[in-house]
Image 1 (tube, one colour):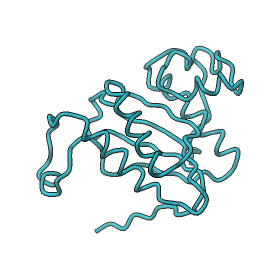
Image 2 (cartoon, rainbow, N blue to C red):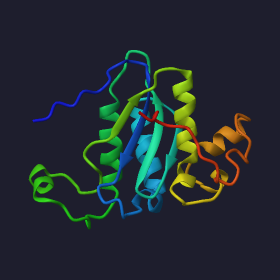
Image 3 (cartoon, rainbow, N blue to C red):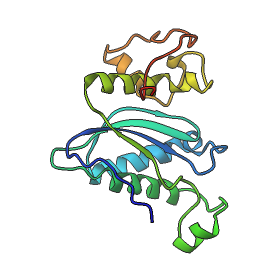
Length: 178
C-alpha cells in the first residue's frame, strides 16, 4: 500500500485542488448550493478559514487556513465530500473497487495539497485560483465567473474588477515551474 506523506502543520494555510472522478461532469456548478451547504456544514463542526476559492464544473481550488493547534484538513475534506455526495442521486458508475469499499463514484479519491510557504506563495496561489476560469476557457474575464472568491476581493477593495483584463496575458501564478 502506498504511504502518502501530507503536511501536518497546525494552524497553517494550504492550497488544494479537488476533482470529480468523472472530469466530463459538471456536478460542482450544477449543484453549487449543495456544495455550499457541505462547506457550511463542515465549517460549523470543524472551523477553518476559506482564504480564496474557485468552483469549476468538475474541480475546485481553494486556500484554507486551519485553526491554531489543528492540522486535520483530511477530515474536513472527507466531511465535505460525504455531505455533497449524500445529496446527489445514486446514478454514477462505480468500479468494483469502489463498490467493495462502499464508496460513491463522485470524487477522485485523492486531492492535491500544498503547504503555503510564505506571503509570495500565498499571493501566487490566490492569483492562480482567480485566473482559473479564464485559463480553462470558461470566461474571458475573471469577473464574469460567479463561483469564485474574486468577487469578495473586489468588494473588499483588494482587487479591481478588471483585474487580469480580458484573459489574454500569460500568468505566472500557482505552482512554480521546475
